[in-house]
Image (cartoon, rainbow, N blue to C red):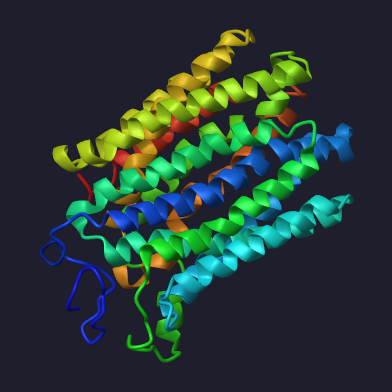
Length: 426
């Protein structure tokens, strides 16, 4: 590799950049990945957390919780497979446009098309089928986009670039729900708008980051060893990898369980009418977004300076646990606002340090997209797992939403403790 900025020499290519090769912070990579994350995650959550439950309620109000759980379960299975397979194929891609660009552009186009299809269907089987195909295309953006940080950012800059990525991710995480809430009375229009926003994700990221060609990279012959390395969950030297995966998944699930059922919590537990639901979805999402942005801007750089990833993640888990427990005290609307503020602060810290932690537990950086795609299940998978957890709790509790809050608090604390057991990272 002759240049950290171009990755142009492939004879000694290793899939990473060293500190000595990259003296300046690669801001374009941060902007590209942050903007790309904003434009896939925001529309996804606008649909998944707000418009999907609203569409299901229109079609089958009597079985809405069960159907949302069915959609989430099916999507989780497909997303898991797509992350691994597409990540592995991305690592092996050789083209004039690079390894990641073809996938994120194809994923953007396909995601847009499938959201339009999802909007048009009205039967439960068609909803499930179109939602699952959408997950395949969505994960064609997710795994390759994250791998760009491993490919083209030196370790000493990863906290800073992770913060820039987190800035876009956080706005998408909560801003998507704010936008989605504005379409509660016109659900179909909202879903189409979200599809059009997703369409911009890959092309804009590709234009900004300008990935170099990968045609000259050494090609790998298909062997059993190559298949295991590129398409199977890591086995060797992977203890820290799985602690990070499951720890972060538990923390994220604690918040997404509430976000996925936020509309039903506000209507059936907080007892708000449609106008009140729309008002509080906007207030809570805005609080989550603002507090998370404040923390995401600074936490990655602070993590670099104190040379610790685990402590910030544990602090974030503790803050999330306190926040999600608040509505268990009373069903007064103000408790959801406190939840939004505390959980937002915690998740801001979490998102900012998240990608830096991911990169430091990789068993093999040459398989970055595949392994980061698996680790990203802690984020995208929890978006799907959260509603399943919430639906299970509500079902077991006989329709009561109360127990979602203490259970999610325990999940977040457990996730923070798992991260503390990671040995490779300080």
